[in-house]
Image 1 (cartoon, rainbow, N blue to C red):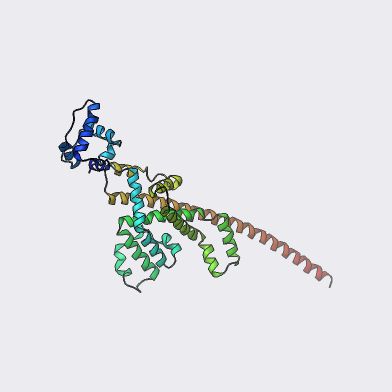
Image 2 (cartoon, rainbow, N blue to C red):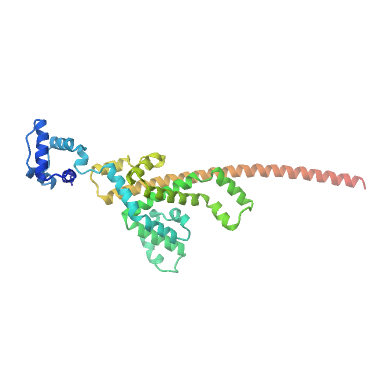
Amino acid sequence: MNRIKQLRTEKSFSLRDLAKDFSAFLDQHGKKPITNVTISRWENEKNSPTAEMWGLLADYFGVSVDYLQGAWSEKEVLELMSSSLLDNYKRIFEMAREYYDEHFFFNDIDLDTFSEEEGHFYEVPGTFDETERKSWIYTKEIRENDYMSLAFVILRCIFFKGLNENLYTAEHIKALIEEQNNLYSKTQKLEVVFYPEFKGYEEVKHFMNSFLDAENGKENFLKAFLQDNYEFEDVLTNVVIEKLMKEKASKETMSLALISIFEKVILRYEEGATDRKYQYVRSRYEVLKDDYHALSKHAYELQKENDRLKAELASKR
């Protein structure tokens, strides 16, 4: 549906008001006036303006032709993300709190691993591990609502952003080494080993609080966040999104496209985490290998000294 009626309403114009005002605009461009009946037929898409008239209408309203014809604007895409978060964040965080540990909720729940066929197993309490059962039930609930799915993958992206930024940092590595030396209690060990997950969840809560408190508008907050973070910066300029915007895609279709794009961002984060883990394990291996060689050399020297002392003692008998 085109936006002629929407833009007319925003001006608080009746059909007659718009016909009169737009006809005056047309007169300035050497064009014939139009009637309110013509505008009504355009609004209801019973007739369509010519290509030239679309251009004149767009100039009159101060918008692009694509937008006037019903294409999505960037602001509307941001509004879709914003409303999805506002409508669903409470339930998503409620699920996280009900999970065995809220810090692992966004790490464990993966919408792509859902299987409808397994439902008759998981829906029966006691059949599987309770955490695994809850994971399936939550995934099913989220997937059944496109807008909840969109809100979830946005927050999951934030989780992996926080996780990656704290994975094998100097602070994390120091804590891991100390944990290996048994300097931590059982509770502290959990926080050390899963330090990145704890930080990732903190990042999600910080993001959501900042979003809710945004004074400059939630859509502006989202836009700034997407543009300021390298992994997210192409979400709004993605060719698929731009194509769907021009094609006047439904909200459901746009939501699914955005979900797919955010899922790809998550995959990039997961690949980055795997690479960083490999680098850490490799560096620890090299350190431990050097330590092993140093200890072996020291043991060899001690054995030589021991043999020398034994020989010296034997010669004095």
